[in-house]
Image (tube, rainbow, N blue to C red; front, side, top):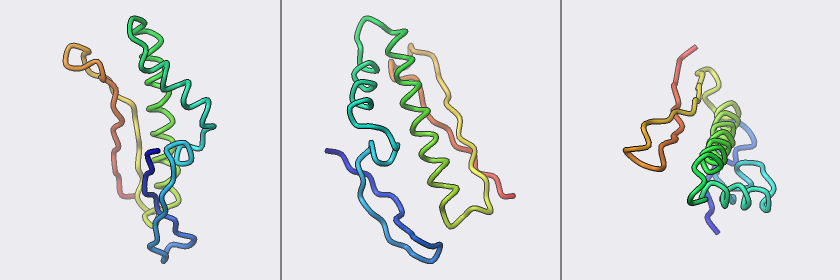
Length: 103
């Protein structure tokens, strides 16, 4: 199973990290996330697959926002958005864009 590194800091001076599953990082139930990933991989139903991929990107964006707000840089603001580009370039045409602003 894929594991991702996230800061495991209990306080702002702790620099530790821990490995967690994608489901733990996203704070979703593993079976539900598995079903959502299967929907995102549907061949022949681009509408359903796109909606599922958009939902996955939304979960990822929320996880980034949550992690950022609990980080040691809370004085800066991070805004995440989901962007798409023409499907002619790739069938994976959804991405997360973050914008960093100093307060």
